[in-house]
Length: 268
Length: 268
Image (cartoon, rainbow over all chains, first blue to last red; front, side):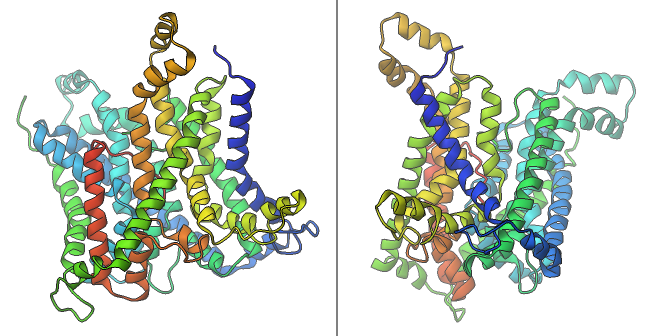
């Protein structure tokens, strides 16, 4: 194995330090009794207590989780259906247009997705709030699920299906007993990605939440605009730990499924 | 091949038409109406005034800078990462920060860059004295680069991994210096990854709006900020839509130029 020189190692170390500095900085000051992000006064768990006593914040966390779970579950179903649909289109041209349409939401800037959905929901008369947020999260997750499932579907040998049919399986049987189990790693990865996208989304949600309904990202944004608030630090520490747990979970899931985990970033 | 009807297409295409095609059509439609709801070309005319052209230019300039610096930091990182032991683990550690809520990382920089923040404390200690870092162009570009780096590293890393090492050995055997090998062999062969990374950074960087608000303190106005402003503050949807339409056109052009293989970014 080629090894790196000292300079290369130093460079990598600096990159890692910079990548982690803000996160560790946030966590460190979540224990600061002074309640600022400078001048550490003394250790306290006061801000954690505040987070757990802030009913409004807890409701927002709950909203965020409910939206994430619901939207990723629904978008996983739609995405699998979509992948099966695209896979079955044999002719190149319609197939490519389907893929292109699938990619539109993936490459669009969030501001445009958010703005167009705001117009859309207002025009068809959906009240901004839970429904609009849920629908838009499903909308931007479906293409991601499709992209996670489609490669698995292409990997699948058609002889598998032929064999199942020869052995007398019905269309439904083939789907539930052969195709879906084969796709499971892709489906899990898709669900998981949708979940993290939904948990993380700010820009789109910001456009389609009305008054009175918020998710965590939007809440953090509005609090951060007013300056430093130590309960955000405490909350971020909790979220960081939660995220790490998710990442580790995802790591083992993809480890089992395929050799090379792609860390949730869909490659071209 | 038997011609079975592709029933999966119906829900998928219906969903895509409703949530991809319709919102885009609506945004184009809206761009031709003023605040009072009259049909007009004013919005596009207004876009051609110096204020908006300047903003567009700024937006592109910042996006260009962000992409350039991301690339400059990411390429060596990716290159040296592929040469470490346990590279999968190191890659994981690069990706983990990108899974932390974007808002939280941005919020951390308010603390780090603040008047009494960590960076200024170092400046003070080094005898440079307190500087205004927050609310400057520098902080905007720095935080954006910070946010985007993982999305630049990943495609380059993958491209480097796919590179056949025997090509490098061949170049060495034929007498090329390490630098020449890099310039004539490694870099050209990983250009695909570089392109994908640039795409994944440039497009979202064009439409950032929360970082400009939180870190650049409204000093930097990009197309994203303008769209958000028109939609959510001044309620001039027509103008907001017009900017969005132009952004969509620009994006389409970029995608065509760099090859329309969509690179996924997770910047939300």
